[in-house]
Length: 237
Image (cartoon, rainbow, N blue to C red; front, side):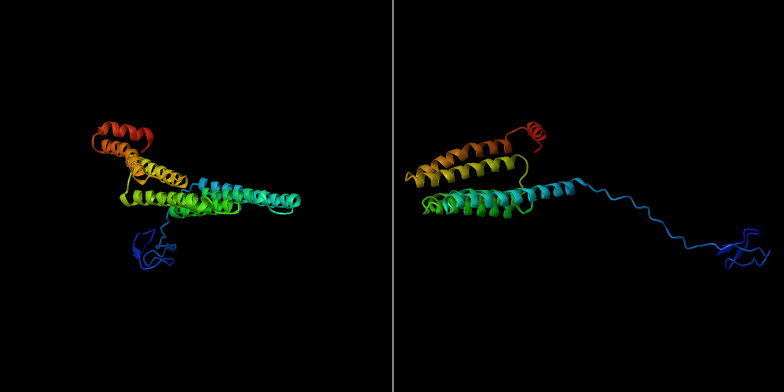
């Protein structure tokens, strides 16, 4: 509906003479499109920039690894007409490159990282032992230690996620995992040296876990809340 700007009466349309005063009514656009004001999206360019820098560094390191491995194989073969010392050096370099791949964040899943690093460690230790002509220490020592370490790491992370553990409990469970891992390694070292006493090992493990468990119980039930909050703010727990 339009109005005559001269006499003010309502008219049916626009861009036509007013029926009362014959004034030419200008065209008025009644369907105004609402203009939506859009704020710019807040984006942090730092993660993308850091990812590009890490990619370049990793590519550069990969090229260095390829050159180093090729050069050592070439020098070893030229000097000895066979691959001798270069096998040990190169498998260690390749294992380090594999661990670096996980360290650069190309794999985000914690379980895959633990399993991947565990497999790389097994391949490295197997290669170092088999190059010596036998598997004297890989099967009784290296294999159970690496597998046990990986299993404890996966169990620790699964427990933290399943129980939604936060704050002091994370530290407590971490120390428990470290004690169990230390005793696990100690058990297979003693077994490799034929000095294993299972009962004694269980008693020592329990005695090492007892202080950590007592500290966790004290923090949970006896420590004043004021001190808890102060420590939590201090260490960002």
